[in-house]
Image 1 (cartoon, one colour):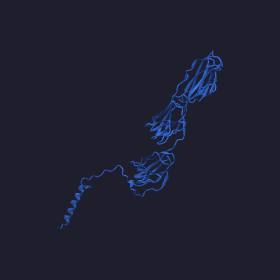
Image 2 (cartoon, one colour):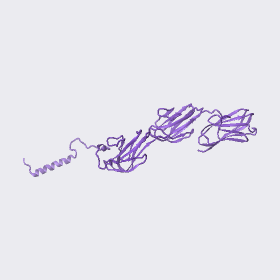
Image 3 (cartoon, rainbow, N blue to C red):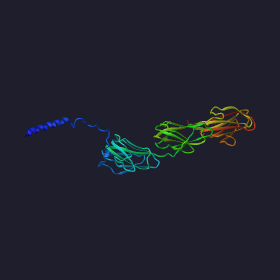
Length: 383
């Protein structure tokens, strides 16, 4: 049957109307898919004309700034040399506008499918962390998921701390930091004789630093005398009846730990009357040849430590010798300071006071000695 031109035009118009009514998906039961949060377009490996092939070296903690690129392009190549023993390696992008994704690879340049770490946020704020990096060169590239400009790239890592601090009893040591997978700087504490217990405590700050204590040498993960491994910086290690000597203390960063404080306290019995500043013993009497001992635990941060022995009206001159020693019993054969009661009052001055126990021993020489006053004084150099 012949169809004239007017008939063909009418058929075309009807078909066009039908297609328009059906929309872009004319088949029933098929819906438009929702867009994914972020599609991995970098894995397509398509080379963009705007890709940069130049290589630049990164310096630890120094930002490469004002980085920019077009959508679908790879940035220039950045490399960082990581030394042996480093820990907590981290690459960070920040600032600017747009959306650059971060790719990191050890020993080779990363691409969309080969990388050790990548970060694909919806902006320029990306971070790649490698807790236990290998020694050698890490390569970094940015991929323009969208056009971006004004971004900064920074690399950092932790290094082993070789410094150490000698601790005083009952003094808080602040800002103890332990990078993830590494030990903090070291602390040393001397335990004298006659101690019932010594306790090391950490608290405060952020993260999770485990406490390690070892006698005579620095602790390791597999060698220690005491370990506390909680889930924060709040840790306690107590050694009961410890042997005298030097103990070594460190924190280990199970996760990155910062801002913790460390304190050491001791419990030990007094075996003689305790001297207290501002509260002298008066009317002290000794038989001929008798020795009398006193003790004091000096707190941290004191100076001008001074022991005094004053004669009463019936004491007599030059009848008593007295001896002072730090952390062991004083006597005629072992002392740090020696004095005589050569008048109404005499003093044994130690100057700067070490934190710890001092022993004062009085010795009556050849006759009874009545009516002595025994005292101690010091200055609060640090409050």
